[in-house]
Image (cartoon, rainbow, N blue to C red; front, side, top):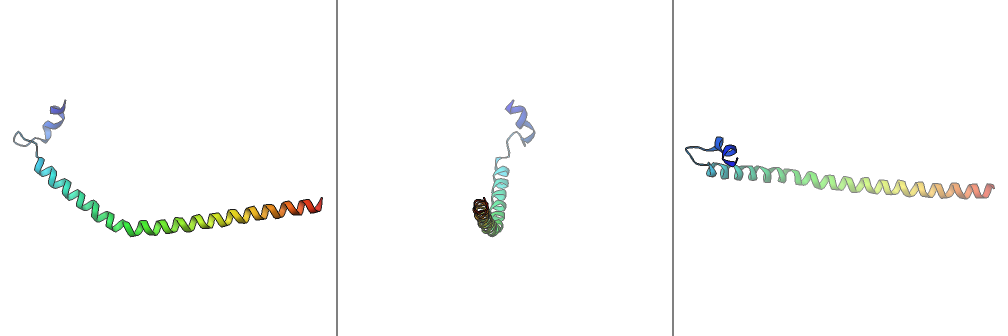
Length: 78
């Protein structure tokens, strides 16, 4: 089965290992370049998520305080 799957890749009876290694090195370099470009974007996204989380926490705390205030008002009215 391996022979059947690899047969189309054979060149002159041999697997093109050198070409595959060169392609892998090229792809690894492209990956590193993309990662270098994305690193600042990732840092910015992390900051935005931190801001989002802080806003959520403040809103949640305000809702808890409002609920407590409503409950106190209801207790005073009854």
